[in-house]
Image 1 (tube, helix red, strand yellow):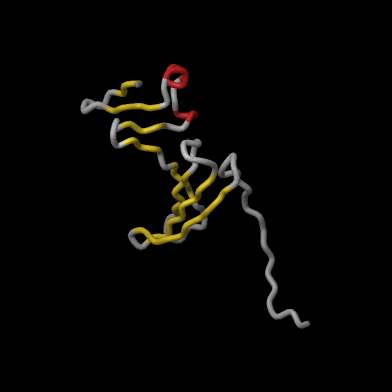
Image 2: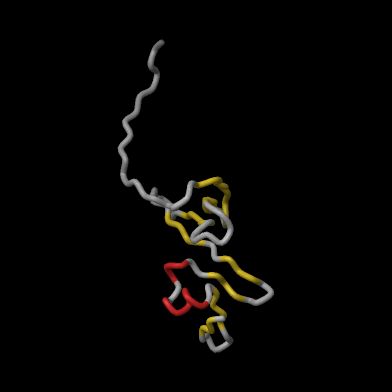
Length: 105
């Protein structure tokens, strides 16, 4: 067997993107730019769904978590690391009023 191609790969960084295994990836274009959705864990887990994007001519991808939103109560559930100690013990949702104040429910 003749070797036609050869390459050397170097690990630039090894990053943990989720506590739980990634179960799925969806690759698409949004406004002409590449976008990847990653799915890990279960619904309501911290950072279960991440949106991955990269700038043009860059190789580094960055992620942004998708927050769970309840349209009935108009509240978002924040990841546990974004909650204050008070809201962690009482509730996991934050409601924003028209004046921009946060109300724990």
